[in-house]
Image (cartoon, rainbow, N blue to C red):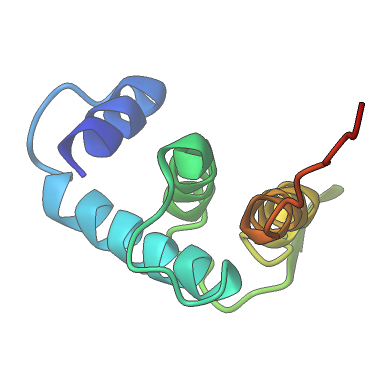
Length: 112
């Protein structure tokens, strides 16, 4: 989790420890949500860690707007989707690849 936290902090240009606990909480909750979507895995696969980073950044940027699906003020409008929805194709591709890898392969016998 430390690598993920450091990557998030670099992306957000945060260079102190003031927000570490809050960011770590976001990372933990998003990781747990992703593990559930992946079929109740124990941890996020390394190849999908970018989803945790991106969703943590999005979640951090929503601070103060929790629970809102959209926001508008003086001609500006912001819509919020569910954090992981943007990555549903990636999650599905990962799950499909895992299914393919778990199917036993049959050998081919050739008689000469």
